[in-house]
Image 1 (tube, rainbow, N blue to C red):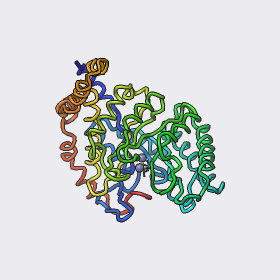
Image 2 (cartoon, helix red, strand yellow):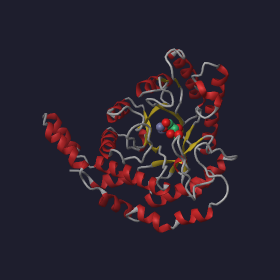
Image 3 (tube, rainbow, N blue to C red):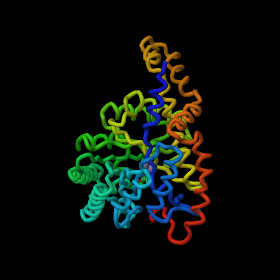
Image 4 (cartoon, rainbow, N blue to C red):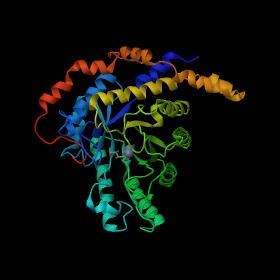
Length: 388
Ligand code: AOS
Ligand code: ZN
Ligand code: ZN
């Protein structure tokens, strides 16, 4: 039997971090479909994030992406967040958008380019000091397109050198989270292609370096929950970039493509203690809303993570363990499926009501009139988005 009050407490205290870039315009390499009312600067992105938090109650943290969210005064940005009940989360570095990075950033064969990339990463830590952010999130577009193009292990040495310089710069309570990605934009080798490579670097660096699992960054059929379980076991799971994929790095809403996979991931998280705040697993979204309205899509995504979490919390662990001990394969599977097949929407509606919120966040957001207000108010200026 599951202790329902413990389940509710866990759901109330979960924190889901939303990405600033999901509030801005985005698209594919073919077209960006601009939406009316989209934020014109990082401050307005936080205003939108506050709407998501207001109706869900569990999205008080917003990740930044530099230079997309560059401002003159980061302390003022953090204060703007605090005024809205938010805090600034992971600072995402960007060493993939300059011409200089054609052959890579921290793995580039030219030391001058590597220095430029490293300086950016160090600047991101300065920003963390100003915003009070705890996490530096590193994703590198580095890799090669053609066999022979560069020295594969030489690139690893250059990567290790840069990571170690950043590691040394981290202050107390700060971490670096290293993200891996199977492919793209490079087509032959990727310098951090998988969790093994990320783990090896983080292990050498020390306890402040952990791995980020972006759910969209694996080959089809990869057992992501196994990776999650292994990283948790080793104390190296820093967090998630949640999203959904059908074919590649599609960055669709988390839980949209495969809610069962999300449940299996959250089951490993819950079972292995990853939901406890002190374990430090960051539940971040890394999504782009190209054709759908952005704020409600983020609300829906937060709800999808909550639903998977609730189902994972409902797994009858003693019954599961008993079935596993006796080798009752079908019963063990049934225990898991019983939890997955539970309709947790009434439970979550109750949790929200206990938190003083409306039971249906989507309807609550619609009722605010915010969507209409931003279309009317945010005219003129550059809309924020990729590269803005
Ligand atoms: C890129 O594929 C990664 O998922 C990164 O997390 C990236 O910084 C983010 O998607 C924003 O573009
Ligand atoms: Zn990501
Ligand atoms: Zn990605």
